[in-house]
Image (cartoon, rainbow, N blue to C red):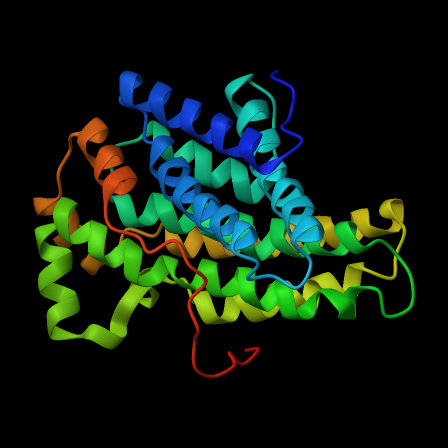
Length: 266
């Protein structure tokens, strides 16, 4: 398996390579990689612009965070078993029954509900109050992740005509219609980070396994073949390479957005 990146530019290089390979192979694994690369570019631009309290630590967090996805991706592509939540996200790529949105949300679920809290806890290390110093920057990277919602919707309009019709009729429905709540995932990831942070790495493992099981149940909900999914699938583009390219090239403002309100843990 390839060596994992050690800086954010290396992360972007790996993500771009995955996207290029998936376009060539018409592989649905490229959907999440394409969107994630755009988010990583936004974080890199935010670091360069001084948007974070500690740019060096934010880059370290971004690399730890991304490497959990890359390690899971490399394991899966090598025939090894990644975490269960990632396995469900990746394995969905083998069938044509899932819509683009489901592939994206399954990846977002594993990466936010499981990986983000682990990366945050490990970038600060154990120690009384160490994690608290990260909260400001954690909230900002979470704001970048929250920007996925309108970005996903905007790009899916191009791939899925029915999705545009549905969101026009019910704009507040957003991504919740297939069982994923971005607000809840963002809030829970911080609680999970605070739970892990006081622990050494080995004692963290049992909590990580429990969280993975919980995230895998969310994946089941996301990948459910409900009525809305069937309506979207009926008119969605089946050209995988085209869909990946749409997710790669759509408009995305590379700044940290200022969001109003604090999501509640539910």
